[in-house]
Length: 282
Image (cartoon, rainbow, N blue to C red; front, side, top):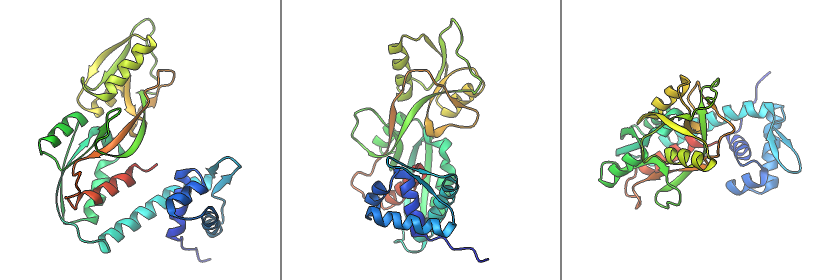
């Protein structure tokens, strides 16, 4: 039996419905009507001979088969887009000095940069990983062309590209000490995550004690993985060996943004921003 080829347009529509949580919202993003989206999903379901969504009057949820297909669909679309950029898009060349907040490193920064290098072989990337505050200060001094980092509450500079929930994290078997302050592993003063954690605990009347301070999120993760302390991370950036800790004060969300090149003079910036957006997609 000859297996069917999957239509990339149908897959793109499928991914959009999954990410937007509904046919109408997906249609708005794709410039299609709700009925056109429904028809494309029906054609895809016929091709794979499986139901991909569970439809109710209030929501659309992926079936088990839909969850399986979603991972493959994203990989196929990413490969297609990479090939199109390489062969069809206007040639891009130049140098880009990029600062990346280490909050993004657990997401797979190296594979992202490798994909970008394959798609744009004439672009010379120079990457430095560090704290958002320090990187943005260096950007202001002309040390970077672009910085990927956190945007502080109420700030309007930079271009937002992603919103992430901030959570408490610790080793899976970690338990709060009885009769003692909560031991915390945090970045140094000036870090937004540190400020939020201390403020939230203070408002809740919970005793705490910073016992481990480190410039690197990987260092904080190591302290938490060992069971030495509780730390704070973005929900999407968990390294292995950590789990979200329930029952503590909410830490809200943080907005990720790209800073630099406000007038769009560097031709390398937009292609890279596109890759970053794709890597942060749900």
